[in-house]
Amino acid sequence: MSVEDFRAVVAEWVMSGLPTVRKREFELPLEPTSIISVLGPRRAGKTYLLYHTISRLLVKGVPKQNILYVDFEHPRLTEVKVEDLDNMLEAFYEISRPDPNFPIYLFLDEIQKVRDYGRWFRKRLNAKFYISGSTSKLSSKGVAEELRGRSVDYTVYPLSFREYLSFKDVIIDRPELILYNRERRGLVLSMLREYLRFGGYPAVVLEREESQKIRLLRAYFNSVVVRDFAWLQPVLAEPFVKFVVQNYAGYFSVNRVYNYLRSLGYRIGKEKVLELLNTGVECFFIHPLELFVKSERRRQMNLKNFT
Image (cartoon, rainbow, N blue to C red; front, side):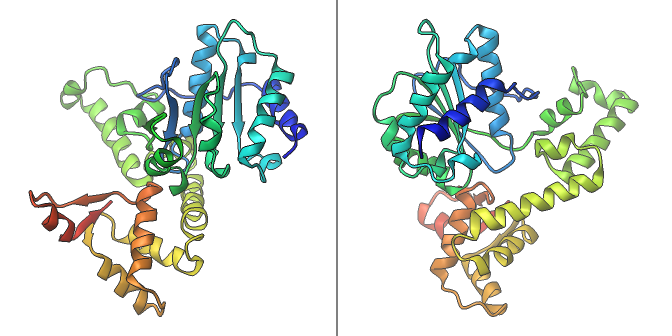
């Protein structure tokens, strides 16, 4: 990856404006002492949280020339290696010309595309870092292994119902009074019904057409199948993901998944089922809820509830 490739990416950032963003219920610190790792499922709003943080820095008075946002899924960065990140800095200082009176803020999105990225951060560079990405390659475990205690994790999930109402411009100042107002209660119940049906992915929430909401959700599903699971064993990705979706909030075991896949004719071992389940947890597609028992041994042996 040459300096010229990064020059093009940096120039694109310098000349572009920030997209309009909606505020979430939590914000990232503006003066971090550690690397800020923004984790979470695909399409949950991680990138827009980075944009929101950049807009707050600009309001605070930090010049844009001291801020760099890089998406490592950019077409010019498909083959980037950790050794190329020095070229990124060179291009940034050359084109953006940061003001020495302010800190440097680097926002590196989809950082998991850069193999062994943790080695670069160990140089103790003089900058404020925000990194983000999806999949099991940028899970809390993966970040801990790469950055070795140098980061603080912030996990972004799809919208809560309160955030959903905010995105719909429905303001509930006194929730406890809704029971006494039929009009407001009816509105909130209608919103809750839609929230339960379509979920809280920001782009889906903001989409007005129901048909387009469904298309987006199907695209998200296919993205999970292709990008999060297919690398393990492509032929198993779709039947496994469909099984999880059809059995949400229910008890099931490794044996049950194993028997289901075997019944479809797949030759598979239980270790592969465990690998699929662990990948689902690490990429935020599956959330296991263990039964509460005081004995650690019994808790591990009990069936789990997956949501």
